[in-house]
Image (cartoon, helix red, strand yellow):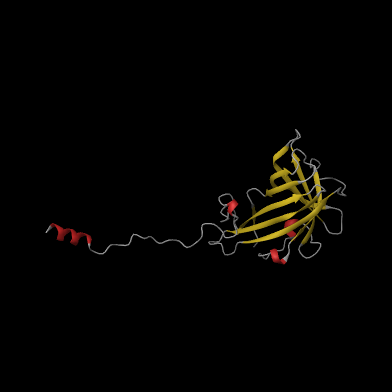
Length: 213
């Protein structure tokens, strides 16, 4: 009788304990794994969209700079289907800049550089003239002056180097710019010598709120 009672108690149908699982991914598919938990990929801090610029470049010993800058766009709408990224190619060389007043006298290095957005590296549908503050010199090519302030007043390499970007107004020798374009690491390829080769890994910390409507 005891055995039959146990069977009656344990042999009945069981209710499922499974809970509904959301199929929405935790992070935006364009969010680099290194930035998970650091970037606001849900644009919660902005009314419309948040853009992060991530610049990775190399300066060689001759003063030539080359690299990329990804513009990662995150939107406040639920889901990530509108998120996109455009990647500019950066090329240029170090040299004197012909302007009457240097907007960054404390900067130690200056480069004439082009920001070039090729179709193969474009997934968004934006015109970047407003962001660079000038007209493009060619299809999605922007003529700029890229300046770096890698040294502290004591002469040591800054833990967070500031990058400045000035876009040339086409047809003139004047520039409009951003005095805090990006911040990040400036790592000399020859230890202790900031004047030659270096590796840059920089971003606009915290992202920028942009109303694109």
